[in-house]
Image (cartoon, rainbow, N blue to C red):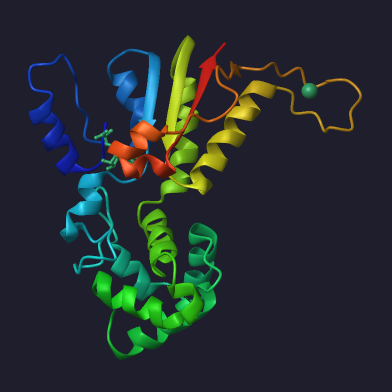
Length: 255
Ligand SMILES: C[S@@+](CC[C@H](N)C(=O)[O-])C[C@H]1O[C@@H](n2cnc3c(N)ncnc32)[C@H](O)[C@@H]1O
Ligand SMILES: [Zn+2]
């Protein structure tokens, strides 16, 4: 499954001749997709985030290095990042940039966005990237690109990534056969934290307040973790694929 028509087209070419079924859809529809095939799953791998194709194809508007319309939609449908940047209130922008980007200069960036768009709507990646650079103090321009966190925040918002993950991961776990495994590959800490916490919940079962001396809820664990720690890329993989640097893989087995 992939929500990006480009990915489905490319995979169709690469996998021609293999016994695979490709579905152009968002992971939130996974339950319907499996039900329509009349099956539960032995294993589900969710490879989240954006693809190298989406990042490198400048025209998709994910990159602050390449000038393009500020799009960022994996599905190529619905509101673009530019639509959101020009529509949301200053408070909403500041909150999104702070929460999804963990950007400490969120307020000043949001204020400058609102000032700039009053003159003319923000349309391109570089327009926004320059505006962000001007909104942060010089010391914040030294190491990583100052637009990195805000671009991450807008990408998460445009694709509703965290809402989708919450719902898709629950449906995926429900649709596993006993003994089946759900494996999720995330690319930033907000996603990884959600996966880690949800997996821990499934493994605990009991929902009684911690101060209860004994369990009265009767909830039993539904899963177990074959690996206690997330699996990350080793030096060899990092050398051939530097983008694996931020990847964390977690796995849960359904009891
Ligand atoms: C990191 S890439 C991996 C692509 C593919 N698995 C590969 O290895 O080439 C993530 C892909 O997942 C897709 N994607 C991300 N979130 C999705 C979602 N909620 N529903 C469907 N596809 C999604 C993106 O469009 C992107 O093509
Ligand atoms: Zn309990």
